[in-house]
Length: 99
Image (tube, rainbow, N blue to C red):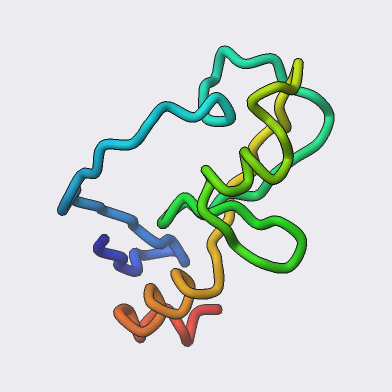
Protein backbone atom coordinates (compact mmCIF):
# COMPACT_ATOMS: atom_id res chain seq x y z
CA UNK A 1 0.00 0.00 0.00
CA UNK A 2 1.21 3.45 -0.85
CA UNK A 3 -0.03 6.38 1.20
CA UNK A 4 0.61 9.96 0.21
CA UNK A 5 -0.50 13.31 1.50
CA UNK A 6 -2.32 15.52 -0.94
CA UNK A 7 -3.31 19.16 -0.89
CA UNK A 8 -6.01 20.13 1.61
CA UNK A 9 -5.25 17.56 4.33
CA UNK A 10 -6.19 14.68 2.03
CA UNK A 11 -4.52 11.27 2.20
CA UNK A 12 -4.41 9.13 -0.94
CA UNK A 13 -4.40 5.34 -0.49
CA UNK A 14 -3.18 3.20 -3.39
CA UNK A 15 -2.75 -0.54 -2.98
CA UNK A 16 -1.42 -3.38 -5.08
CA UNK A 17 -2.19 -7.04 -4.48
CA UNK A 18 1.09 -8.76 -3.65
CA UNK A 19 -0.18 -12.24 -2.91
CA UNK A 20 -3.38 -14.18 -2.63
CA UNK A 21 -4.24 -17.09 -0.38
CA UNK A 22 -7.14 -19.50 -0.92
CA UNK A 23 -9.44 -19.74 2.10
CA UNK A 24 -12.73 -21.43 2.82
CA UNK A 25 -15.73 -19.09 2.49
CA UNK A 26 -16.79 -17.49 5.78
CA UNK A 27 -20.50 -16.70 6.21
CA UNK A 28 -19.63 -13.68 8.33
CA UNK A 29 -18.15 -12.04 5.22
CA UNK A 30 -21.06 -12.95 2.93
CA UNK A 31 -23.11 -9.79 2.31
CA UNK A 32 -26.24 -11.93 1.72
CA UNK A 33 -26.20 -13.28 5.31
CA UNK A 34 -28.96 -11.94 7.60
CA UNK A 35 -27.43 -9.57 10.17
CA UNK A 36 -28.32 -8.89 13.79
CA UNK A 37 -27.79 -5.67 15.76
CA UNK A 38 -24.31 -6.61 17.02
CA UNK A 39 -21.06 -5.44 15.40
CA UNK A 40 -17.67 -7.08 15.01
CA UNK A 41 -14.62 -4.95 14.15
CA UNK A 42 -12.46 -6.46 11.42
CA UNK A 43 -8.99 -5.21 10.51
CA UNK A 44 -9.06 -3.88 6.95
CA UNK A 45 -5.46 -5.00 6.42
CA UNK A 46 -5.10 -8.51 7.89
CA UNK A 47 -8.79 -9.51 8.29
CA UNK A 48 -8.41 -10.45 11.95
CA UNK A 49 -11.44 -9.72 14.14
CA UNK A 50 -11.39 -7.99 17.52
CA UNK A 51 -12.96 -10.21 20.14
CA UNK A 52 -12.83 -8.56 23.53
CA UNK A 53 -9.39 -7.01 23.76
CA UNK A 54 -7.57 -9.30 21.29
CA UNK A 55 -7.47 -9.67 17.52
CA UNK A 56 -8.07 -13.22 16.26
CA UNK A 57 -8.26 -14.90 12.85
CA UNK A 58 -11.79 -14.71 11.53
CA UNK A 59 -12.10 -18.51 11.45
CA UNK A 60 -11.40 -18.65 15.21
CA UNK A 61 -14.04 -15.99 15.92
CA UNK A 62 -16.63 -17.88 13.86
CA UNK A 63 -16.05 -20.95 16.04
CA UNK A 64 -15.84 -19.00 19.34
CA UNK A 65 -19.17 -17.25 18.69
CA UNK A 66 -20.85 -20.32 17.12
CA UNK A 67 -21.64 -18.32 14.01
CA UNK A 68 -21.98 -21.42 11.82
CA UNK A 69 -25.22 -22.32 13.58
CA UNK A 70 -26.53 -18.82 14.32
CA UNK A 71 -29.64 -17.68 12.41
CA UNK A 72 -28.04 -14.24 11.96
CA UNK A 73 -24.49 -12.95 12.15
CA UNK A 74 -23.12 -9.67 13.50
CA UNK A 75 -22.66 -6.73 11.19
CA UNK A 76 -19.08 -5.83 10.34
CA UNK A 77 -17.35 -2.55 11.03
CA UNK A 78 -13.83 -1.95 9.79
CA UNK A 79 -10.78 -0.74 11.64
CA UNK A 80 -7.10 -1.50 11.95
CA UNK A 81 -5.45 -3.74 14.53
CA UNK A 82 -2.47 -2.52 16.52
CA UNK A 83 0.01 -4.72 14.59
CA UNK A 84 -1.11 -3.39 11.20
CA UNK A 85 -1.30 0.18 12.50
CA UNK A 86 2.29 -0.03 13.74
CA UNK A 87 3.44 -1.54 10.43
CA UNK A 88 1.63 1.07 8.31
CA UNK A 89 2.98 3.92 10.42
CA UNK A 90 6.55 2.58 10.38
CA UNK A 91 6.42 2.21 6.60
CA UNK A 92 4.97 5.72 6.17
CA UNK A 93 6.67 8.05 8.68
CA UNK A 94 5.10 11.16 7.10
CA UNK A 95 1.69 9.96 8.30
CA UNK A 96 2.75 9.85 11.95
CA UNK A 97 2.99 13.64 12.12
CA UNK A 98 -0.52 14.02 10.66
CA UNK A 99 -2.25 12.00 13.39
